[in-house]
Image (cartoon, rainbow, N blue to C red):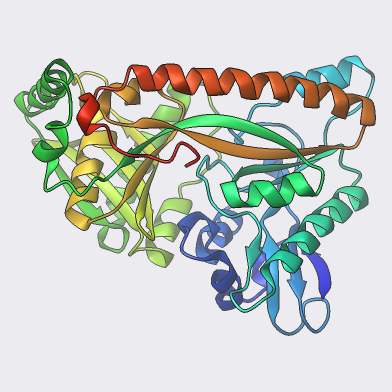
Length: 389
């Protein structure tokens, strides 16, 4: 097996990369390459690609056995697993925390594989070589640390076994219990919570807002321009960084049209909100949204209720609506664990972080238990959701 690092994805085979990536849309060659081609990632944005690839016959030659989407980072923006306090502690100790390495999908807090292994390869052997290879890149780039973000529960065992520190987070996901329609889903709620959602949906309709759902390859260029304005407005409202460029969204529609799902909200002739999701396997992933603030409940309808209706109609098993948001609990999303794994070069700092993560995991377990006590479902109808995600 021959390991190499790529500074752009186009240096490898799209077909072989996708075979290793599986059906998660954010790991697809088309998604990651679109980020690179449209200027969303690169040294100038602080997300410098250095993807690890493993080939059978020589560096860059022959069959691709495995890969890791890997980036050299000069800050901690766009990750959704927060280590600002770690960086501050490093600085107070007179050391440089940046650059660091992250095995992640940029700006995307969605769980998925980070150790991409070809179907016919020896999965465990390739996975451990990829972990080792990522550490080698960390050494070569003089990175202070290596962070695996939003990997799968199964990968947690491999990463922990290779000495990385385990961290647990929490998101809110919707699970399809075979609902016939949205009313069937609402029937599992307590009467008070059910009436609250019906009231929210009614107020949006009374405001004269209607909705349509389009596949990415059916979205006209003008609609992508409108959506980009919504996206920029949301970024400004939250004081965030607008990593995604105007060129990115139509590129996504062109290369991943069947997987991109755009919810559009219209009042009269005007579009007043939109939300973009990506579909992969049995899951819909909510990602970007924007809209007017003068319509009560518009965000909930655009980002939660209409996508849930879509999932039910399409027979999808799950809807992951992004990071954070305890307000999702009252709307039928339940808490699930997310995972990250961390290697830190400095032994003393590593011991301190290990102790912190132990306390944090205990806190997170209690937090998830408490959230479940406030779920909106009737006890007999609570969906059976694996808390590990």
